[in-house]
Image 1 (cartoon, rainbow, N blue to C red):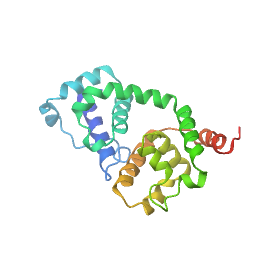
Image 2: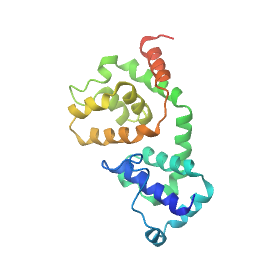
Image 3: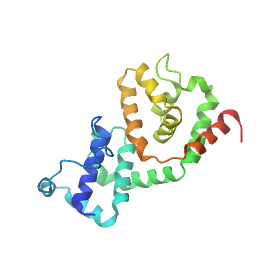
Length: 198
């Protein structure tokens, strides 16, 4: 992978996580970046170093980890990634490797305090599921898995017209294609948690 390819991956993923109109997969990772503009950048040594250290998939995962781990991808700039990126990437890798355990733990907490139907009930504003996420008690990964299983996002989009949900909704939609999960095994975990069935 060349330093310029690394830079293009960064730009494509930044566009993906910050722009509704851009999709990393639909546009096949393409951007309008030029080699000329790349060589003018003061931070290009970062991309040069990264292209030597990581392969293409690792570079992609590194940037995905950084964009999904920050509170607002719009405000995440390359300087912050250069400083905190490795730590975020390691934490994200650990989380993804133990995802079924994390999902089970977070689901147990959620359903200990709420009935199943109430979790997704947004008739009185933010439902318990969203409140738990906003308070940091549920990870974005768990939220994405719930959306893959229940498709609650579309319902929330119709009923919740506020900037907080709109931001979270975009984060779920943008992250979802990067999270490869076995839906059946997560449904099974949920059945165990909610119904106590093994």
